[in-house]
Image (tube, rainbow, N blue to C red; front, side):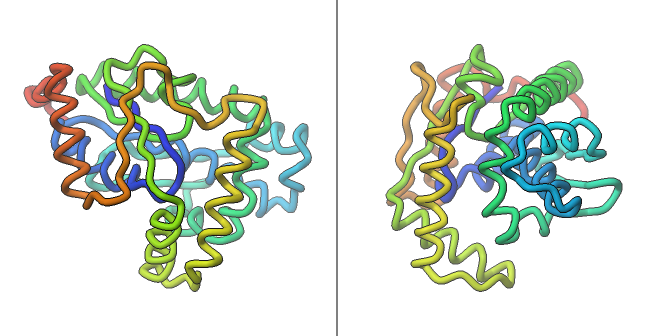
Length: 233
């Protein structure tokens, strides 16, 4: 198992999926879980800062995430919401929703169940998020904390928004990145931080392919390459 943590704009999602494919492993985007619950909160008209109401809604929300890295999926009550959970409204509200202790407890338990199921089925998984190495799977054999210069991360986020048809200037993206970093790193429960034994990888001047090579080398050093190759999906 590989645990990838770090703030937005470091390339986590792209490299996590590519690495999972290279390892013939499953893939789990834990951030998508918090985003789909946030979308449910917004659709229900619940204040994201109302912890008890958010927690109650999280307990009853019907959602599902796929773990195939070649075609990850996110569904809310059967509806494909993979694109909608990346929108500006969810971006703005996901930090307060994910800071609710009951929400984190609920989703961490679900993440661990999914990880266990995938490990039993195919033998490996790449999991990305903000508390994977510190909270969700502190015993992961490889933990990596991705970082990058905030300005570079903002430029990447702005480019992603543009590619997805969402308007976002680099200044707006930088403000969003700074706000998310501040909220995620200062929350009382499971704040964004590197595990003590995580490998730090700065992606500021690295391409996706270069990051993938570095991660693959780390996986090889830990004996993780090829561990899932003989298991049929």
